[in-house]
Length: 235
Image (tube, rainbow, N blue to C red; front, side):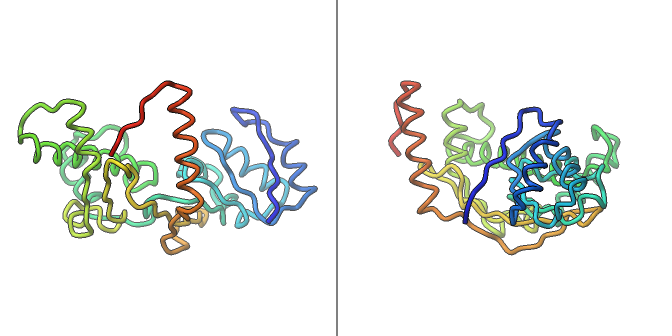
């Protein structure tokens, strides 16, 4: 394929000249590598220029509810990659209502429960808690942990499908297993599409091709370590 780049000056509110180029070149697809106001501004320009929203794809930073909600039907067909099943609801959402919001202890409106960004925030919190739990299993339950011990917990997460189901996240994300050498676990993602009112999952799980990704990670990590005079850890 042939790649054409259309850089946009942050914050990205003004994009008319960029979309004029896109309109002239007529690319088969447009990938949004954006965040913040740049994303909805781009979707609105695509709508104004007549570019099909179903041919728009975005990284996960550009795939939250606030990117499309105000545009509504005008963003219908817009696609984004997501690291979790943003269209699914699970026991964790019900428990959040039951034990927090129904008792008047929630912050903000409960209408945000189940939104893509809100669910991602709960995932992050769960991973933090489980990392601390793993560290306490090794270094002592109920003890205050050092930063190094918590790091060990993050590097030894083992969240199986059964464990995630018990936590209420079984329908939301895939199992995660980390190590000193692999802080990501398995890098699976899906494509979600905005139907004008909500996100819908439109693909199975995809995994990045490590024969392309891993050499780049090692190359740029080594460069960063050299530039910053950081001694790489040995796992």
